[in-house]
Amino acid sequence: MTIKIASRSSKLALAQVEEFVQTFSIKEYELINIRTQGDIMSSKGEILFDKAHFVSDIEESLLNGSVDVAIHSAKDMPAKKTAELDHLYFTKENKRFVSDLLIFNKSQGSFFKSHMKLGTSSLRRRLQAKFHLNAKNISSLNGNIDTRIRKLDDGKYDCIILAEAGLKRLEHLLEGKNFVRLNHISCSGQGALAVQWKKNNKFCDLIMSSDVASLYTELNANIELEKSLLKKLKTNCNSAISIKSSQGQINGEIYGIDKFIAFKGTKIETIHKEIVDMGGLKLLNDHNWYKSYRL
Image (cartoon, one colour):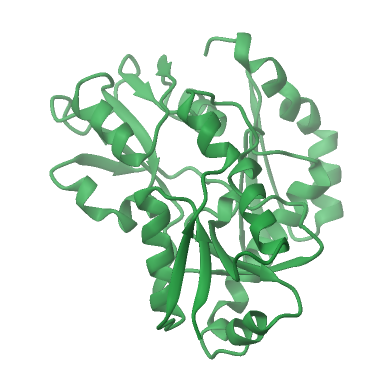
């Protein structure tokens, strides 16, 4: 049985498809590359758009039956689910790399100084660099991983921040690079992948009945808990929030332009109230005027 797999066309996206077929021992498949609205916006240099645009066009191909399954980065999956679709979060060999890496130009060594020109487009990462690294010179950085690494190598930045998971999947890009692993909490789902399908079809049975799927019960519980809080907070992919769930415990931070707050707990309602009481909802809205603000 040949499975039609939908994916974006970047090198990273194709590596993620390969991770899926290896993890679930898929022997016969046809790859359907889809250029999403997110890809189009990113290619134009846009930064602040909802990362759900990386998912929605691919979801449409599932809904109309032109593909059987789709592979996404778990962090791109919106907190509000599409009712007709289902998904499973997974990682290769059940190993998840959740950290961000600070990668240095070869002329800079491996010690960060606040005046260095640091490249990142993520608002969360920009504000984490401001508050936790005391970074004073943060610049936008867009493009796929290869492009971002090339800009670093060309000397356009002294250092850049990228997700460790993506670099692990394209490991050759780190060869000869000086980098440090940042201790900051990253975003929901970082390091994991999602396989998505239309409910009540044979591919659901194929994936969910496999012995492999049972390995990811804890991973799925953790990410679903994170997404539940994000949905309660009505965040989007431009919201500067870090979050991590482990064994039912949620930890995270919300970043505003001038300050940030930390939260933790086990119950969504209790955490939500704590965030409201600390002024976290106002901080989440700070990104609305981010375009006119210089960090």
